Length: 388
Image 1: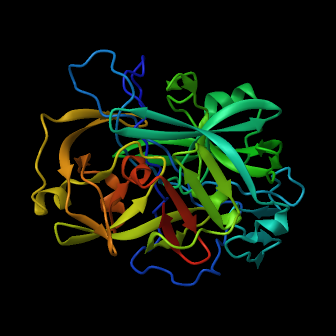
Image 2: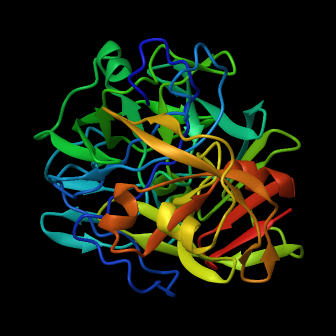
């Protein structure tokens, strides 16, 4: 979501978990843990735009990533009221937990059936540009079609504030702030009572709205209105992106066989961050597994300690409300568990995500890598990602 008036680079996306006040030191091994949320749960997310040369002119969509961390308390994404009108007395997140008059009700991964969700398969748009890959899915809001990024790196679902305003979505509660690569931008929770994916109506919810460069801009010629985050996928229990057949599957049994690796679905107040332990040249760090990231990204300290080869000059990344420099590097000799990752050109930068997580998150594995396996399945019940 850059602030370049012409959106000269594509969205370089990587929605990251809200990390303020959240300890990511230990991965939760219990698949039955769910998000505990209140009407002021602090969880928000934003995306960054594609890095582009400081001297470049109109360039097509390409790479990378960023993060957003709320600096004040905001209502969690997909906080749905029991009346699907997003009232303050009873809310529940897409990840399934709720607070009703001060008491908590916990739903485990895949517990969306209690909210009326059923397994389904929907078509997606796969957008390729050079080495970058982005996945878009159509939602309907108030019976109007909108495309959202399929974004497991986004801890919560987010809608552009321009789109929210055009739909007349009611603001609920006080605004908060999100920080992305050192920049801050306001977030306003809004009520979303009438929306669906495919043939499936989704629970009435509170989601953050934020001024971005998504509204009115295009990825592969397609306007994008927001991010469909990991909170919803957690509620379905499983989510598969099939890059070959251009489909997204929700709630079906995970495939067996093939390569896989363990993940930890860290549960924040209203959001879900999907993290795996990655080895880069023998140096280990936590990485978000992020279908919303057009390219892979890592912290510059890890890139330097791993002696990753630099590729060309530094370029500019447009974040929510500022720009920052990134250095393209050759991302090679990388493993997740026993899975060898393909060599790609990644972006390295000193970003707020690593600092705010106290070094627990060192980067993200983007769709440029995930797409090379043909398909990727997130199984929140068994805490694994299955490739191919």
